[in-house]
Image (cartoon, rainbow, N blue to C red; front, side, top):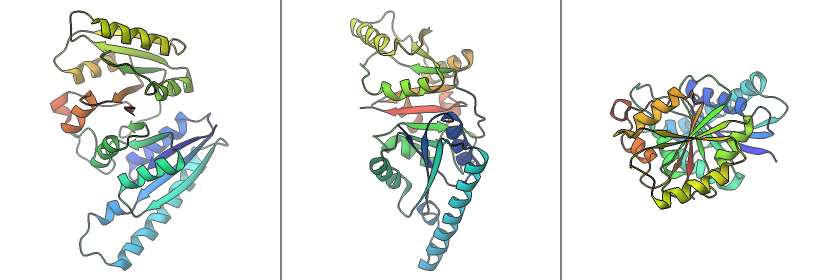
Length: 276
């Protein structure tokens, strides 16, 4: 069955990198890529704007979308891929939520910072809003200037404090694309696992048993972000995958989105799975 992949774009280099990454990641899979631009992003930064200027901006955005479609189709796509363009005058977040519902989007792939140039910021405002508010679709965040690497190793940090159900499906599907090794990593915050944690670990092992998993324990750390970063570097991880449950590590990134504060610099793609 063909996948529907949503590619929001502000026409920045980072958005283009994210689109190229998605096309290469799904090179062998039948996909429809939906290139989305919200002209409201530019309009909202302007004051005293006339209806005529709004129309001009929309026409310019349509031309840029058509140019982007032609570029990625010619330079990166293959016979497995088709492209659609969507120009919206609604807020980006509202546009994405509506399209996810209407088009049955399987995955959103977005750049980490778009036009944002601040080097100490983890994610730009648009990316944070998508991660925070889109509840029905996983979001793959691609760092600035990231060159595609076949994802041989996927990291999945967990504290074993919950039973994962359907949330595992995007992780499994991602691993199946390239027969990737899933590395489940637990950062020790206790002397030993509780009985509930042991049961959840057993359930996770059963769910992943056909998908080449390995299990890793990291030393106790006061900074979970730094421990995850160290694990990614030590094991040459290609994609980080986490579930965005309440009070999760992902929430801490969104609330405190500065690299120097958290010690977390996502220099690999980061798949965020909404909690079911």
